[in-house]
Image (cartoon, rainbow, N blue to C red):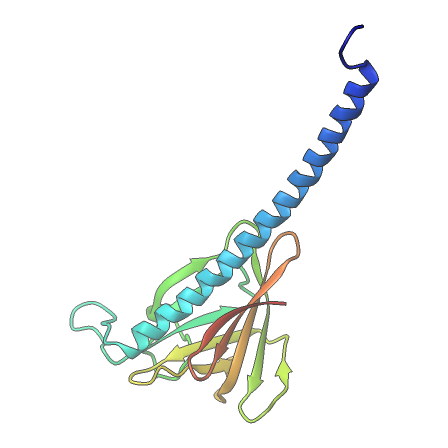
Length: 187
């Protein structure tokens, strides 16, 4: 009596192994994209927290005597959807990024990830408005509260959300409350 596998059994087993491996590799790539998107969302939230820390502490901006009373903030724009800016609000102290002399650091979003939408809830309103082109969040001493402005306007918002998208189409959002709370969510 001879023992062994027939050619058909070997082909069937090999086919099953190839099928299982293909499914695992396809899911692994999607999982990796979701993890990278979530990490990017946490990086952006950390940048917002950094601006909050700079804004409520005494951090010098500029050379020489410098400026110690500047508020710090972030500027997000859907027109520049692969970057956002950390700035010191020294020109006019108006809560907006006005010119390059205020720039502290530019953050680039790479590998096909981008800012796809900006949403905000106006103070006194329960309705969220999306499709906004620009969001500025500024923190000024001694309050940890966020001063949120949309589209360069002067009115303050109670909540803002930046939505980021991966090349595969997955989305995540970074939520900033006027109270200074920063959180990550999925859409």
